[in-house]
Every structure is written in structure tokens, then in C-alpha cells.
Length: 326
Ligand code: ADE
Ligand code: ZN
Image 1: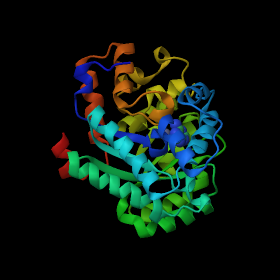
Image 2 (image 1 turned 135 degrees about the vertical axis):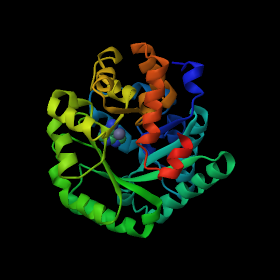
Image 3 (image 1 turned 90 degrees about the horizontal axis):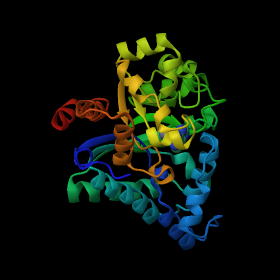
Image 4 (image 1 turned 180 degrees about the vertical axis):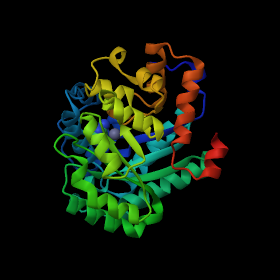
């Protein structure tokens, strides 16, 4: 889908992007070859055929396999730089990127390896075109709270590199209560707090994220409409939802874009933002997501501007920086 020029050319913020989810098939195959990693695909076409997901877990299995090709500092530089070049192409002037150390640590790849590559690419993009980037330390819900706390402690040496603590991966079977202590420790360390919730999980998981994990932003959250009291709460506190339309279709949260509830979320007065989640896996970067929604629901220019403005307002930028973008 080619996003209409007027949407594409507007400066935007992206708040929900997993860096590993921006690993394009071509780069993945190249790094697999270079690093001697076995993958079940031989071509970009075979990869595209395999990306036929039935739910979140069927995606996550291929997502973690894809990330297994990342090994050295240069690989992580390319991963970050490939995405930041997409930011430039999509007019994403500010982005908040989820980094998931638990995807790399079990293979003996330490923070110094991936953080050096990420930092170098971020510095190059800032120098070359002024790219604004914040990083979110994203821990994985399918792992134990104990393991997450260990990673949080490891990240103490990199505290200034991360603005927020977040959580992703398998939602069903991993309720917010499992991570109460982790988020207490994150709060003590001064992180902003966010988490995936209400993507496949019930409204109760959004409530738990707000009340037990103390998050101030919700990734996805689309299932909130099933609980009117929750909707009231989200509206009153202007808790931002980082909605990912193409992701929701590809992971069968909704059957088709026509069935997506994003317009109703907006009509309910919620602070909705549009994001790409895992663009290399779902077939579209940020402009494609905006375009798909704008086209499907015939959004007015004012609606699109509100969605874009929400992205900056809900960002973790300091107020002066935020004011600069707004
Ligand atoms: N990790 C990467 N993408 C995700 C998603 N949409 N939900 C949960 N975990 C994820
Ligand atoms: Zn996500």
C-alpha cells in the first residue's frame, strides 16, 4: 500500500517497535550465511511464504528464530541502522525502540556486544539526519520473573541508555501479577513503565498492568472495549494505547482491517497512537499502517493529525523536547 503523500510526508513518532521485528528477510538470510546459522528458508520468497501466522505464538516462534542470526557488534549495527533508515524514509522523526536482551543473552551475547552496535548506529543517524531515538528495555513474559530481575540488574550498568521498562512476548498464561516485584524494582530505578496487554489477553490483564505493574502506557490494549469501566479509566487518565493495526490483522486479533476497533477507540476519547510493531514480519512500516487505517475508515485529515499528535504527546521525551516536536 502506498501511503498517500500527505500522510507520508508528515513528521511522526513511533512508540511501539521491536527492533528484532524490523529484521528484513534479506538481511536475515545474509547474516545467517555469514554466521553459519541454519534457517528453514533459502530465499526471501520462502520467508514470505512462511510468514503466515495464526496467532501471536505462531509469530513469536519465527520471530525468535529470525533473531538467532544476530551475533556480533556489526550485525546489531546493521539491525539498528536498517530500521533508522526506515525512520528517515517514513518521516519518523522520533522513535522509541524495544530492545530485548533475553533474545541474545542465552547465546552468550552480552550487553556490550549489542549495545555497542545499537549506540554506534544511533550516533550515526543522529549525526547524519538528526534522528531522535529512545530505547525501552523490553523483558519477555514467557520467562520467569527471577530471570527478568537478573536482566534488569544487568541493565543497571546501561541505565542511561534506557528510558523505560517494558514487557512483550506470550501474553496468555502470563498475567501481570507474575511481574509485580520486577515492576516495583523498575519503578525504584526511575524507569518509565509500559507493557504489552490486551492484545490476546482479557481486559483483566490491562487492569493488572495499570494497578499491579503501575504502567502509564499500554502496548496494544485493543481488548479494553470489552470493559466499559476500564475504558472510563483509560480515558480519565489519558493512558496511551500504542495500537498496531497491520500487526493485529496478521496475528488474527481482528480478521480484517474492516473489523479493527481503532475508530471506536478514538470515539471513546482514548489516547490512540499508530505503530508498526514488527514491520519486517507484518509487511508494513509506519506509513503503511497509517495509510491502511486512513483508507479503510476514510479518516479525516483532523483524525490523522490527532493520531500523529498523540504519538508525540504519549512519548517519553522530556517536556522541552516534546514541545519542540509539537
Ligand atoms: N514481540 C514482538 N511483537 C510482539 C507482539 N505483537 N506481542 C507480544 N510480543 C511481541
Ligand atoms: Zn509489540
